[in-house]
Amino acid sequence: MRHRGLWLEVEEEIKKSFFLMIRRPTRTTQSRSSAASDGYKRQKKSSINNEESSSLGDFIKKYEELTQKKKYGDYEELRKDFLSGFSAKGVVLEQMLYEIYVNRIDKIVFFDDVVPTLFDLKNKGYKLALLTNTENLTFEKIEAKLKLSNYFDFLGLSYEIGEIKPNPKMFEAVVNHFGVKPSECLMVGDSLRSDITGAKNFGIPSVWINRPKKSFDFAEIKPDFELSTLRDIDKVLEGLGNG
Image 1 (tube, helix red, strand yellow):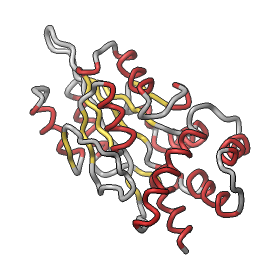
Image 2: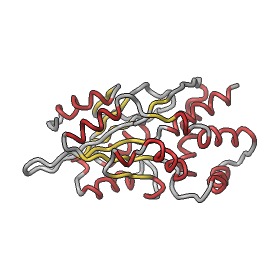
Image 3: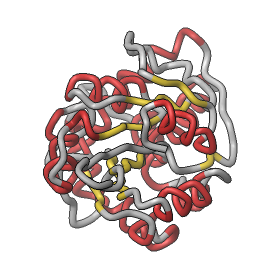
């Protein structure tokens, strides 16, 4: 059942591909900004052995490249683009697509620390943005379920921007929207490859939310800060002089 384990792990990774971004409040003469994190709880866990880890990371990256950079009218359009990226076709590939795209919406919920932290930050005057690699049809369903736009001042969606993290265009969209410098932001995410690498390359300070570390997230990059929960974000902001 090796492939079944792979499908489940892919499902868990793709479904939580949403990340938050925070802009710091303006105080007297200084306009400041900050960032955010992974917003969902995975309700079930699956395992993947070391032999599969590297190929899983490559698969996720390829899936995002193939399906999350433009809008689709229906699932069949997305399916054709997905399958076009692989020389080998078959039941396994079809099942993997089903698991990561179709069979997961009901499993997506917020982590317990997300909503209280977002409300706290908004009450302190921070502007929040969500920066995510996602398919448009999936995001529409998730938005209907979680009402994400109620929590954020800006939604940076890969299919609207035309690129995926860690491409700098994703981060550029956020700083341009708020009219701030990269150094006035703080990126908080749980993916070293897409969140932390992208932020670092764009000059944005970063916080890695490690809950738990992914076995296939092998990016060789060190975040500026590492936390296990969003509840500790104030410690980072205080350290930066923005608490």
